[in-house]
Length: 186
Image: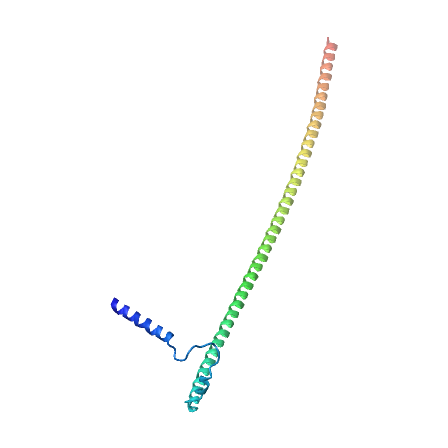
């Protein structure tokens, strides 16, 4: 195997060196060579030109079909991207709308809660005020009743004292009369 590789590489080297060392056309200096002009049209068959034209036309049509398909696919892709962006924008708008709606609902609920709380606080304050007034009224009634009881008790005591004084005066008079009668009898 190694021998075959060495022989093949030597043969390739000799062939390559031979082509370079012995060119058929001479040295090319970069200018246009007139030798090629003489043979330019020789052996050209114009009938084959149509075949090349039809092949070119087929290639051109295939290329145009590919371009059209590529353009159509690109348009569809752009359309899908546009639809996707619109859908995302609509979804974002929907989410924003829902967020605003929820915020407004939350604010409304908060305001209602505050209003209910204020009403409850006012009712409690009114009830407290009414209860305080009722307590004051009851206290005044109690004081009035106590004053009346005191007055009645005082009046009763005065009347009783009067009655007692009267009774004691009568008893004293009776006792004096008895004594006076007793002294007169003796």
